[in-house]
Image (tube, rainbow, N blue to C red; front, side, top):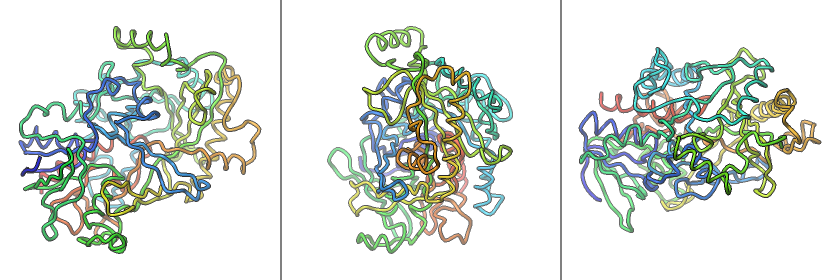
Length: 533
């Protein structure tokens, strides 16, 4: 599908759906939207419980990036799944709608020199106009936006037990995690419309998919950007066994994610000059920050068997599966209407009065670290490091567009991150030893309850920590004069015309909660910035 368009958007994930939807629906633009994965029509995407089927089993809708061996993790390679489908992460994630804390965006504004419009107040109008919350409509929340948000449809028994336990430990119940303050325990707000997932594709792209001005091409791999001098004029992409070229008279927007966006920039000669020359790529713009500043949330966990099934043990097997499918199909309820993790909390274990740096989850299954035959009725407590200080990087493996980039996560490279995860792991043990949760636990499984010393628990963390699937920051915004800043405050590439980045790559600092809502709001703001010059 070669041709000429007003705008080309690379990536039909959360940011790309927002961008294309607004450009076509509000601005009447001719838009080519390119997605490397397939369409999103499969029933498993619509079902909230489908997240676990897509994330933890082979799926055409998820691409797994394997990191380079991590020296801080005893040489282990870590897999980070990313959405590879129309809707991107919003079509496969656990649908958590969180925005992080007010202070996260203060740090964004500071990275841009202040007065940038990227602080909490600058982004709040975009959060509000996108959100269609079923019960909140106030200064912090929108009640009529296209992105439907609601409290959990279904609560496993473990959810109530966990909430009561955390309150006994002094964590206050919080009714709203999206108002800028995170401290507390409560229910996870979810992007669910009725009983079905509400992805970015559902909310923002679907309303314009019948518009002749939108051209959506799936299973299209963009191989390079087309430049005339220092201006991007289009893209080259492979689809259907053929190589195509398309041009944009206005601008090209990259929305392919924190791994794919810097890879495409470097393949096109935009990035660290020495690294590009190593791969025989002509340098169009020497931007040393491309691929740097990689941040992600990573977790530690505790699993235990329980005295009976308080969660989702064998909910997807045999008669249970038939019963649950019938319940969901007839009434839109039951376990299939749940994202599998209905509760969460935020704490700071070093300074309880400070902004939280640990996110807590309770799952009604024993995961990860156990083979299917070892599974029994049980639970998993998870502690997610949401203010990591460690930084990684994305680099080219070769000049071949078909090869994945080299992903160096860099977890625990800053030793204070491991210190905080150690405190969090000990806190998980304290939670498990507190009633009413303690009364339903029959046998702790991981980490080995015999391991109590710091050295043993640190070794467990290094051998088992996993991603919470929120890579960001690899093409970050920054103030003028910052040599590592890839973008300016209007999300324009420095030294390159006609090109912007709207996905999670643009974040200077990772938000201290699930990132999907922030990606969508940032893309929404990006469209306004682009259309105003």
